[in-house]
Image 1 (cartoon, rainbow, N blue to C red):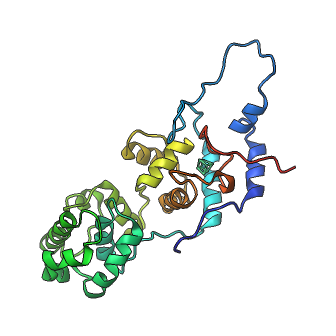
Image 2: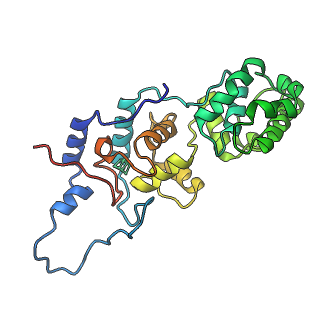
Length: 273
Ligand code: SF4
């Protein structure tokens, strides 16, 4: 799957939804009267508001569905970008990926997973040699300690298998809710919504799933994402955030959900006539 960029390929769809949802932000602007008697004015976005779309109208169920339909049309079978060969190596890769890029983790794990693909082999490798493999990854000392400890725990308590339950996964050293959600989703096909920095930004910026914490965004997504998009939803949002709705310079001009997005500072499309 790699670095597919989610870009504008659904102009027609945007147009059709815009006409269906005439109460959207664009049409609201177009209706502003020259001499309005009413004192009611829309709240202006705070200056410098970079990440959130405060005070905006919540997305309708139809809009959420439309957004995922478009994202799915661009990437029908999205996959995580962390390389792995089984649930165990996926778990290790996700633990290593905290505050690190997937590309950086993949670079380190390629030679590691060529020789270590089970908890037993990891424990046999030992913390010191593991550190050598992953020393290019941030926080590698702590991560090496956690990987060895979680491998030992899998051997001792889980028959060397990766458990398929969030509450059990979260008892493993170095495994938090996000890591558990990623493993449950990718390894076991569960409808979980792992919220990383990209999903958090997209959820808040677009106004689709606003929340002050990753958990709030996750629970919102859990509530609003309809089938059949639930399994892949977090992948679509990650890829959208990573390659289109970037933190510094979002590519609004080529964004397939531009007309749905509530971000006050988005770059809107020019009318194409
Ligand atoms: S329109 Fe811009 S801000 Fe909104 S989702 Fe698309 S890229 Fe992000």
